[in-house]
Length: 178
Ligand SMILES: [Zn+2]
Image (cartoon, rainbow, N blue to C red; front, side, top):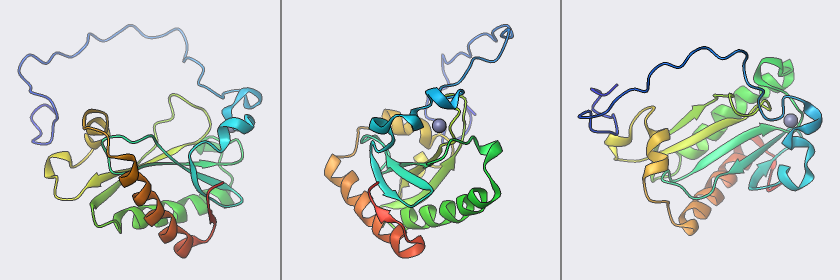
């Protein structure tokens, strides 16, 4: 990676951390026990929700380096490996619709999707917009640039949200907000 033209760091002086010994066990993730998951906290589940339907909520992140960062989360407590078939099918349709809506923004060239899942057990999917014409930010390193670039002004983020939510309602229904 240090030799990729899109690698965000100077290779000179960069060092890998030593490989640590194996853990005794995988550490528990947040919400591993559904009773303590954030989905059970009514104050939390509506935080930053910009679009929703009966089964899913789409949240927006605080302003960051990317023009827009969204998180798609099922209302019911599931990890991706135990999503029931109907939610799994709808997830595919929503991934397509959200990606299309974000990429319809004139300032955005690509909408990257990701799922890591090492922090929280409740399924959550990231959508990270890559600004148009910034070739340096192409590819997986956009997730890093999102942290390093100056945050977009909140009014720009909010205008992007309004555009994407309108697109999404037109494409798949649902409603703005929770
Ligand atoms: Zn949960």
